[in-house]
Structure formats: structure tokens, C-alpha cells
Length: 528
Image 1 (cartoon, rainbow, N blue to C red):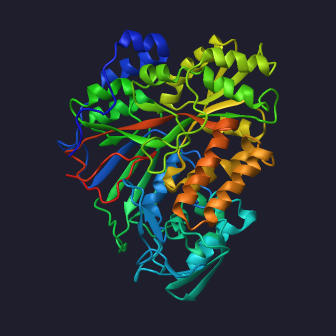
Image 2: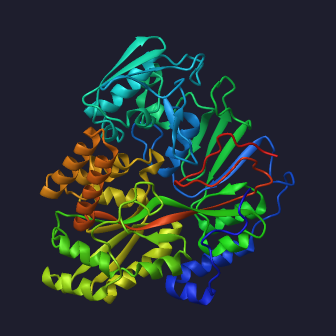
Image 3: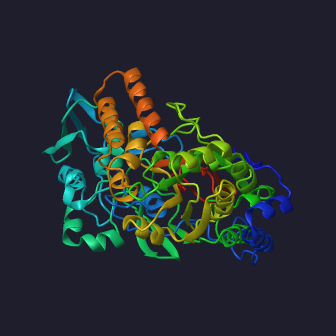
């Protein structure tokens, strides 16, 4: 059953809320309250053979699952592609997809798996073991700069035993391997090799939906793939994701019946929406993090990085700008994660300590440009972050822009501090994966520029030790030690872990539910 009262969305005085978070909030709430035109479709909104959804995040990358990292293309890919195993969208537990079962252990470093009979790609060609080998090898090829490669450091070779059997050889024993194969989506070798750029723009997978078209800042259109024979057969003929970055417009689209579900519900509108639709807010790993250019002074000094964390009035940020929908970071993981470890350094609100650390680092008169992304809830939080930093004597200039523009600056090294959202749990939920996303590969090398430091080497070494351990308790101890180093050094570290608010017409979407990750899933969801 859906939850009519949104968890964590408590009533606040509009005056108090807008006074702290700025006039942009007044405009959002006011426009949302106006609604939109009455629906001309069915009583439950639009055509009952179609699902329409309001998506918050821009189409910031292509769809090739080897390199896609944007929230929207990654969510779309869960409907278009399959891995040998995929994550259950609600529980984040690995389950067989293209394979008949999770990979079976032959010996400590050898696994085999068998493909589902009759599986085909959207062009009608069969999915073969050669396609599986190709899909993994292109990830492992350094020339392809795949974001997934950092999750497979243990993988040595992949071999097609026959048309439907694949064998994996590992460099060392890695107990998490059967679930880790979820990071690799299987692609058709023939089509990818013929036109890699075309494939990135209009991908072909083996999932229940095929992608018909994608128009940046407009919509993504899917159609059911009739020959799909897996566990997640499409229950509607067509699906359209409206790319609606404006929060008020998303709310209006739901209220008017133009869409049946929206993600990233504006906190200020959630309680009102819950009177007529289902609204729920689910705790996630998804974080708001602060990242520093550690090659630029004074941010090469960890005392400065620590100071800016201690300066933040996170309880006020969560209570006021997010209306309770988050929890201050007590460690790298959210407190509800099964492997949560409370960090040895926890950044409580302590402006006096922040000033002391800045003084010790010789950064008393610090001025900085703070880059943030223009996602609705992040824009709401940004003024309170500036307020906290200004209060400890850090003269802060806000620079709010689209994610792609901000990361272009970051990747060129033209930044000091970035505050942005991040959620690698869409790829997997084990600690090794969640830590390697930010601390092994692209991020420490090209973004916060920590690569090669003593602390960086220590973290990677601890992760590698944990990966090689077959003792669960020992793995957790090593993960905790790595997390403590990261918390102390704070080159990139969470400010808070967010609750994800979703709203939907529960009469129109049987089987739909909110997720503990960024994005929405319509697998096994129908229309009524």
C-alpha cells in the first residue's frame, strides 16, 4: 500500500521556510499551487496503454552503459539493457537477468554462467556469449575510459565456452563477484562496433523496453519490446519520460494528469500533494557532498577542508531547506545501510572549531567561489551553505549552473569548491563499490586531484586488502578504516544523506513504488 503521509515531510511555516531559503522558494511554491489544465485523458490520467513520468535531472550524458553516469540515462538504461544479473530496484539485491542464475563458483578464481534461452536484442539478433565477452572486455580496455572499470579490478579474462556459456577468470578471489556483474550491461557487439557514437545516442539492448527517441531538455520515448522473454516484461505499450527540470512545472504536470509520477518532489509541495496522490520519501545513500580542488591552496591543507565541514549548520539545512528529508552524515554510508560505520571524525556544527582550524592553516581571510548544480533541491540548500560559510569569515560567492557546465570547470581544474549530489548506489550497494566510485578512478584523478597522495594510496590499499579477504568481519574492519581516512581527509565527503521524495497517482500505476536510489523504475508497473 502507498503511504499517503510523506515520511519526514513535516509542516513548516511558509514564512520561516522562504525567509531562510530565498525568494526562489516562494516562486516554486506559488507556481506549483496554481496547477495546470484539467486532464483530457482517462480518470487516472492520459492513455491507459502509456506511462508518462516527470523526470528531474537533465539528459547530461549519452546512453552507452559503459560510460553513462547521468541520473536520467542510467535510470533509462535499467529499462533498455540487461546485465547477466541486475539489481532489484527496491531492495538493491542482485538477481539473475540475462543469466539463468548468478555466476556459479568453479574454484576460488573461476566462475561460469549460462545465458537465458531465447534472449534477443531489440534488433532481433540473439544475445550470445560473444556479446557478453565483448561487453566486459570493452569495459576493461583502458582506451575506452569506462566508468565501470573501477568496479572490476579483480577481473582477469572473460571467455565464451560455447554460445550460451561464459567463463570468468579472476586475478584473485573476490567473494562479491556474483553480484558485481550487475555493473556490466550486455550490448550487441555488431552494432556497437559499427557505430559507437550512434549507439551512445540511440542504444540497443535486450531489456523490456526499446528506446525510440531522446531529445535533450524535452523527453525520452520508449516502446515495449514484444520479443523480450525475461522476468520484467513490459506492461504498457509506450512510456514517455518528460524532462522537466523546473520543480513547479513537474508538480503541475502531475496535478494536471499530464504525467502519472514525478521524482524529486519539491519539499514544500509534498504535504499538499499527499492529499490527492501517493507521496513517499525514502532514505538513500544519495548524498550532498562537498569536494575540493586539493591541488589548489589552501584546499591542499586538510584543516581547511575540515573547517568548512564544521562550519555548516547541517541540522538547519535539513530542517529548513529540506523539511526534514535527510540525515547529517555520521560516516560515508547512511545510518540505515547494513554495513554502516560511524566515522572516527564526525562533522558536527561547530563554528568555533571551524574558525580555529582556519586560523591554524593561515586561512583567516579566505574567499572562495562555491560551485553548485542547478537541481531544484540543491539550489534551495545553497543559500544556507553560503550563510554558514560567511558566518565563520569565509567570503563565499555562489556559482549555480547546470551540472555539465560545472563539471567542465571541475575537470579542467578551474574550481575551488563544489557542492553537488551523488548516488553511485544505482550501480550497486556493497561498500567496495560505493567507495570505489568516488575514491578510485576518475574522481581522485581528474576531479578532486588527490591521486598519488599518501592518504589516497592508503585508501586504495585498504580497499584492495578488503577485496582480497574472504572473511566478512575483516572486510568490514578494513572498509571502516578506509572510511575513517576519507572522513579525516575530506577531499570529497558527504554533508548529508538525502531522503528521496516521489509522488505518483497510485490508482493509475499499480505496482509502482519509490526507490532508495536516484531515479524511478517502471519495471513490472502497469496502468489502470
